[in-house]
Image (cartoon, rainbow, N blue to C red; front, side, top):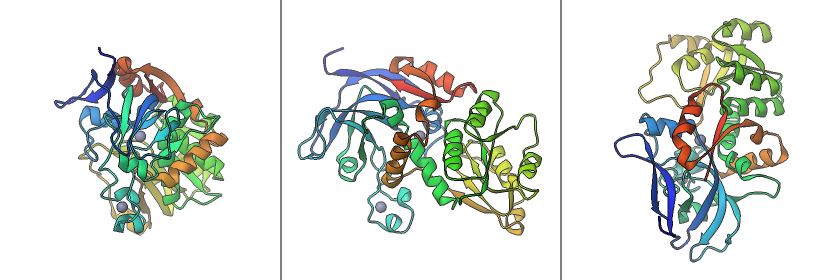
Length: 345
Ligand SMILES: [Zn+2]
Ligand SMILES: [Zn+2]
């Protein structure tokens, strides 16, 4: 292991992941090198490791915060020592998609990524990301772990906005992992009159109840009848799918009232199909809204929410592992008694 080598967790070409020693990246013109301080493990990372997720390039680790250690030629806005949150995907803000409400569908959005990814002692931030406002500064009172939660919180902020959530509404959140719990906090703080949260894990339901949701254990109770009890027999105005399975999607559809909205957030495994009578959607005028990822607009809002304590990012972290313990981190991620699993160098 030479002085310029480092540890990184990367995808193996044949599938799965491996912890390797590799050469530390260097900054080209317009680029930054960041020393990773914290990187959250996300469901899409696990999907990529297990081979199901093909929507973006095979790079893992994107919920990341760290310290600038090298500044490429021409970069004026950052200095060595700056604590930063580099976003892994940034749109161009000028194409048809960007100008017409779909910035995360911008052809440039998934074109760039951190190199070799966030699960590395050091990584390179491409000039596209640096020059397109894709690197935020960590405010004074925010820890690196909290800062690394900016990206997932930003995705939730955007999903709530896309769902046209309004104060006073009654909302069902399906799935109480870190994402579901973030939704619960944002909805409660945003003025939802009722938030019903469902999961099979008592541990996760407790966490939802502590954040102001009405917990429903989907393995013991009938979600639809529970929802009816809290919505004067109508059903919820909005349900948000924060779980990656088709049963969750069906539950979300049946939980909303006539004219209600269903927000799809949790990424389904590739090839998932729904065995559901779609005519119900039309006769009940149910709208399906999907939300994928976030831009700097929501990243800034999310960081503000985290720094003001609107979202208790720290309270969502239950486990911490080093890069060399990555395999163990994956096992913990899948257990129902964990919330956010954090990787530290
Ligand atoms: Zn993520
Ligand atoms: Zn664009």
